[in-house]
Image (cartoon, rainbow, N blue to C red; front, side):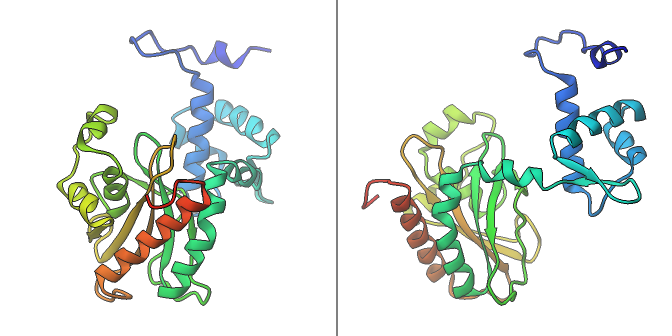
Length: 252
């Protein structure tokens, strides 16, 4: 039986570090399924991956064997519960420390509260808590991401570093003036940046030997749950509580 590598020759050397094309396609299949509003057929998956159906099928079978995808009665493909076990291990300490604070914030203000982390490329939503009574008008989905040049969470994460430290890590991403303001205030605010009509407020989470993160809340710009300064101070208190739960020195 021919191997997958024989049918999928590696691209010519372009000076980049060696990478597994098959692994990349498998990860891309998971991303496509995560972005899809519903299950997809093999034909749809192969089209989005830009590969022959036989290759898409082999990738699918591998992901199935690891319980990461599954097929419904009609043969359509969707993500499987096995991914939940993997997601639980992503910054598990941060998730555990943040959940009680997120629940308090969400229920106190009737808005979605979440943790955003820096994956050294974008600002990524790690975990979200919706208010108990389902009154949130804006939903922040775990796994969603956006560039650092948009939104309060990215500004808050930037503000945890000096401009010099930021440029050293992310020379291609400018240090926003809003991040300097957030360093002074202790929190960041954005209005209509990521989604029109949606605002956010966020505070940085600083923990020794870890990349900074942010605790944030999103709400309709037209109907904020409280004054911006009050929301900012609430996010700061939540950030300090999370830092204490993670063992950061008090008074930071």
